[in-house]
Length: 479
Image (cartoon, one colour):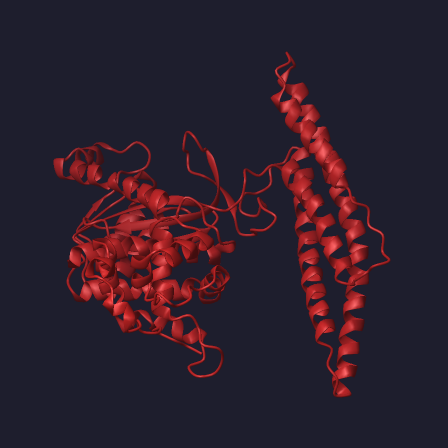
């Protein structure tokens, strides 16, 4: 059942001293901004208005998520801090004698509503700010960055070793749930661990050994890991077939009991555990075969395509992205574009899978900003990766008068004269502030790593970060 507001404070809570009830300045401004029913609408499609258990009040969930992303807290630490703080309880509209939502409740709400609800919140916030004439769009700047996935640095050997260990663990889960109990599966985790450690030791070795010899040893060990993974997947395939037969038999037995008017709750729970374990094992075997195939492809001297290369066992959408950074030449995650204005308010953001070109993303972002604010920006600036004549033509077609984007390659004399003008150089210098905006998102609002898997999860995570950032900015402008 959909709930928008929670329980009101009790009578004795109003007797507390005013110093205790007063919110910090930033939280007071954000609280006033969020106290608008327009922020409830994006969540309404995900709940029935009258049927079901009462949901966590939306006003409470919104404020909890703001605190999480503003102060970089995990779900567990967020609930613990709110439970222990009077001011944070009041900000989240939780009475002093009330119960703070459980961390798993917040996790489920976040994944259930997904990026569509977060996008709706960001649209509502920007529409509210535009209605109050708080958004300046005379100058806009855009830049792209990488939102890293929640993965460690992927290597073929590391992925194969982890896949072998997970196959063994998931197989034990299947048998513990009552599936394929008589099917014997060999655990190859120790053999995979020995080879992975041998690769690490060889790479750390300081012996006067030629680089080619080290790479030959690494390639040999990786090939052995690929063979181990293939054999482990083959054994687990037999286990999976037996477990599926057991699952069908359990379902048939449950149907017979239901026809007789009987019900076995314990058997239903065991069947649910078995079904989840079977589904996990089936997905893991598919990923393992793909990782083994791309490892063999690399050993054959052919680099797998970055658009389809698997870099994680659990995040199927994460991709390698080369942005040319000195410290991190290749990052693994999702590509994001940020468009902000003079006040630092993020007027548009987008998260895409893989590494799409920067240029084609700019005109759609400006078009969305025009639709949100009802005004056309006078100046658009971006870095050289957007510097194409077609991009400039698209922006001028949208009504942008000044497009300040350095061109790719070596410009001609006429273009050099244009780029050396004082106004052009001043706008280019202002554009460098977008690097600081992205740095702020990464350091203070969770863009340094998404904790949700998949493109949908990355968009949800990044959207919550942008919402918290814009709440701080817009509430300060409205004060």
